[in-house]
Image 1 (cartoon, rainbow, N blue to C red):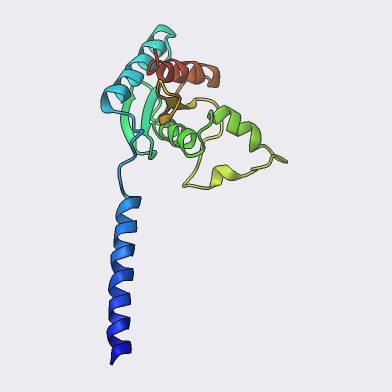
Image 2 (image 1 turned 30 degrees about the vertical axis):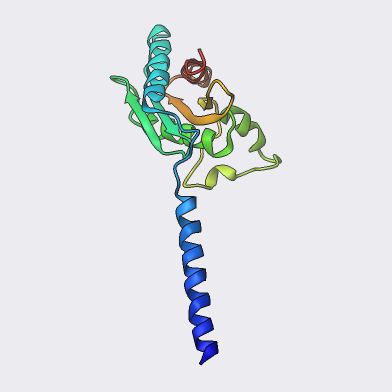
Length: 164
């Protein structure tokens, strides 16, 4: 009888502990990009694109790689919508410039074929982590529609706007 009572008590304690742990894993990340910061980065990138006369799609994701802000410039490529979002997510998943990640994914590279993971990654330039003034990553930006050099320059303008 005591064994049964002890077992029920242990199960209750384990269940309670697991509930607390699972709730802790869903807690909001404190180094999150705010919506004001996301729009600031988005608008800075859009201005750079307009100044460069390039039509692009721009995606901003938060620290959890969830879409926070997006714009499709008029007449930009429809196919670039998904690419911009995936560039932003890729940059956040690995906290790296997607162009630099691409160098590691070439045949013979240390992470060759990684772009097939996570429902598809983009491993060419145009995705960058976004850092706050303390240097902590708070999100990422992805740009698609121009050349890879243009996409990277536009993404850089957006990411840098947070610390300016």
